[in-house]
Length: 357
Image (cartoon, rainbow, N blue to C red; front, side):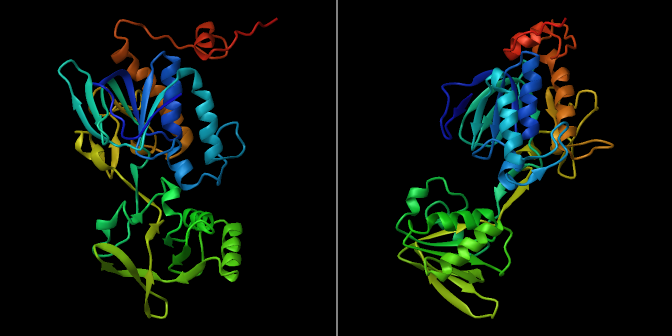
């Protein structure tokens, strides 16, 4: 399985049969269903890791409604899907968002991402869940000018925070995990949350309180309400506590973990029929949108009777693959085959055909 490095631009457009937008469980299973039809896919996701909402929001929380799997975590489901699609060698383009989709005169699509990667594809499968996840930002005047230099919503390079005075905002797993991680590496760590209660793992909260008692780090209840800028740099944040008193916290770096919010983003500009921030499918035979060659599967789509379940997305991915095949193999008749008995599918999957007595 090949991963494109974020920011790397291919030499000229990449020509492909299928592009899947979204690397969550439904997007990954779309790879599998296309692979069975000998269609190779490129997968694009705005997140830096594969797994979508399952991995980003609840990697350790149990899921109970995957058929034949009594219980698994979001991370386990993702890992198993990745193993399942290994024979099809999809190419992943992570940490980039699809910004341009345009129909070509030859019926294919020009696609471009936020990092400049360009494609020419016959079909597009939008499996973007509820949209691309964007960090919920800190709403303080002027703070955005320090994004990427002193204010961060994700940690990409932990080493840049070593030896720094860090303030971390948030009360979830990400905030607690990074606070605990930087203790002993950063010059100082202050965790700031608007209340005493946390949404993080109890063991992490207990460890944080223990470190506070040992004066290894500090926890404050309050919210950032202002900033102090000196010599063009963020020097302090103003924190208003539950008591209404505003205090100043000197800092080098500010980490903000307020969670992620889904946004439809550029998808809204591609000429697709949209209803309440979801893509309307023309029919439930192929899960094709109003634009021929563009399919929508999973939570991003809507139709009468729609249920937002992972298993529904799996079903939609199977039918979408068959619906797309005529665009890719216009002269070929596609036959329904079963992975249990088909020697052809066994060859595609790289497994031996069983011999039955």
